[in-house]
Length: 105
Image (cartoon, helix red, strand yellow):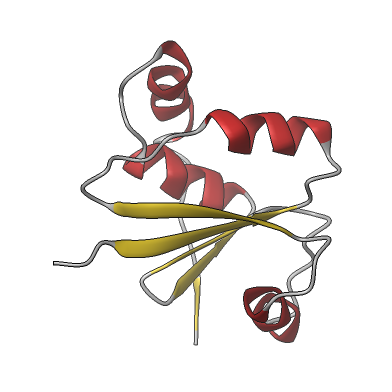
């Protein structure tokens, strides 16, 4: 069974975003996290732009064909994150209850 590829798109030039994205870990059973720099052209960045989302205003998580943006991306990351390590446990408890919405093509 092939694990799902989960895409996390963010502005690597933003120190807060970069630090967050480098330490967040998802459960291995969910899939493989691929981090994408929004400063580099990519197919998923074109899709994000076509949806009218401003990557300068929030990160994007694409999982299972669903695009989560901003607070919804962080909420979803918290729900699928590993509970190992202090950061990931804190991330889960802080962001698990944010209201979730998404964009689906």
